[in-house]
Length: 187
Image (cartoon, rainbow, N blue to C red):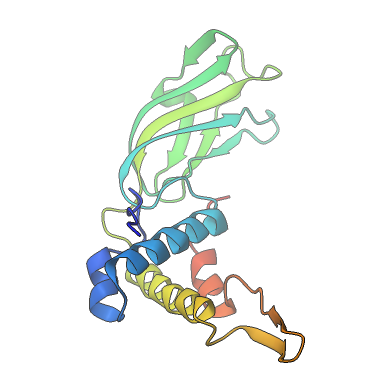
């Protein structure tokens, strides 16, 4: 089995190898799984700093907010309103952006905004230069938990020997990990 590490890992393979007694392939498999769990849980599009393109349906003028999903935002290349083949590139004074949270507020005076089926296309560089330590720590805890679940050491709720049946605890993210990850959620 040869497992390739995803391009946006939550922790380094070396950190997992140094911390846990796992083979390289198993370490990469768990890193990939936990990275995906973190992205889904926090509604982010990436973890580590890199080029990103987010596309969202344009919000109504009563709440003209779009969330860039790779925070912190380092540099915006363009913010466009797209309707069919028509693109309108916004100038910096036609939106405001909180780089830490990714909250992008469209100014309601933008020509052509809003239109039904309009999409906001945000091209930017975002994500962490270095993943915060508490996220790396919770990722290591999740990797240990995933390994223990797959090796049958935890998670069994009930078991029968004669007819061979087992049921497992399906809680994907334990509460202490969820508490940390929730602080990094993008809405």
